[in-house]
Image (cartoon, rainbow, N blue to C red; front, side, top):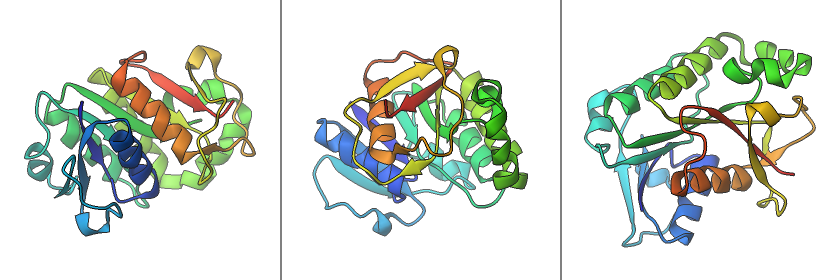
Length: 202
């Protein structure tokens, strides 16, 4: 497949891009500063500059045949919603978006412990929820991951829907490699179109 990875210069975006290439896909890797995409040049990898605050730059890369995987994060409100709207407006074939477990649609399933996210995210929380809802309304898949770490892919990893979601646990970390593998699985064989899915380490 040809995949587009948004925010490919970050740790999760790099994990997605690396794994996609290993699986034999061709990848267009998007970043505001593509020189920061720390992967060697290859025939099956194209590094492109685009900014979610400039929807035209996203539309120049994404089209109706695109499958977009987003690892976009933000340290200030508005970025995620801008990114979701820019991607959806470009009308790709599919969108697979990374969000946070315990926010928006997964808040009820996560339980009382997820209340800490309200404090941690502050004014960024509504931005996360609106971005997720934008993707879901367009039929995309939103992955709600727990606390991320930089460990290896879990050999016992699995992906579940909200009906099988465990309570939120700050100590139950999931590696970026595990999340990347789960998002690529969804790109290759869709199971959660228009829904929230959880990548779990076990």
